[in-house]
Image (cartoon, rainbow, N blue to C red; front, side, top):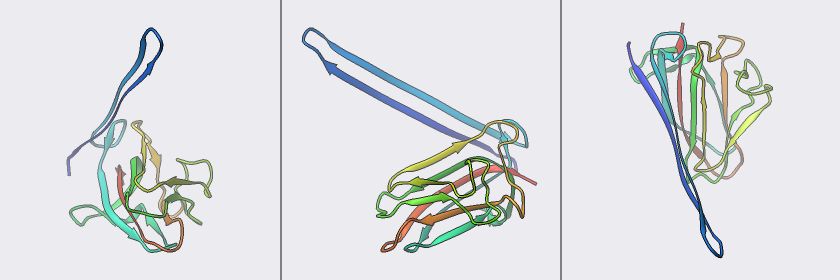
Length: 168
């Protein structure tokens, strides 16, 4: 299924500091765009998974990137590489969303160790992008589990996830 995917990041800021005889300004207009065409290789991908999910208090889920996720058309996705990982925690969450730390078969080539997690605060965003040919390799049965956890008791958390990658 041919496709084209674009992700953009824009940061615009203006800082001002008033002194006795002048005012200093620092303006930043930073833009970074990532674009993938259909295929396998640098700046290419073949599949997209996206979903809005809710975890009950203290719950976690293991997302199997090699065979259990389905795309928008209901087709099973077997990722062989992740080119983009985006996790957005809902602003209304009380608890944090933890990404990573699967007990077995963890996808860990984007962190230093299998126990590492990234804490996504309420309203926060984790974005990881790899435009190179290999991306973050997914190996079915040994390195294909992405764990998502509700950090605490008491309340549910809701998060959105987008995965862009290559398939077998």
